[in-house]
Amino acid sequence: MAREFHRSDRVGEELQRALSEIIRDKLDDPRFRLVTITEVKLTRDLSHARVFVSTLGDTDHQEVVDALGRATGFIRGELGRRLVIRAVPQLHFEYDETLEQGQRLRSLIDEAVADDRQRADDEAD
Figure 1 (cartoon, one colour):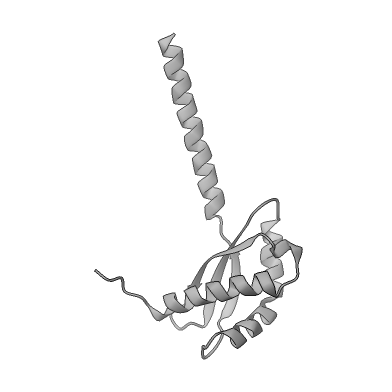
Figure 2 (tube, one colour):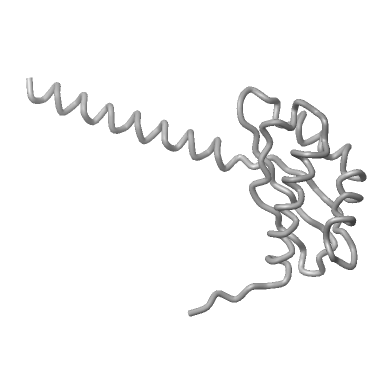
């Protein structure tokens, strides 16, 4: 069965690609070197976009989100030149904690498995 696509989904995917290119190619800030746009969620009327970003390394994620927020005007201008869209949405950058949560969960699972193995080894002795 075919998945139903909404216009906001298609525009969100295009925004994600364009934002990644703009941040990589146009923003000359070392804080943005390891930034990834993980998802863009648009309102149904396409007027606002929540842009989820993740960072790698020891980069202060709040500092990156704040810096992207300050660059919103420039970024929207670039989006307007790149996309065929009636109006460029307002951008709201947010840190995506999914990777950190996944790493924490993996760590907890690894710890639980190690504890189980240790108990099994102790009982075998």
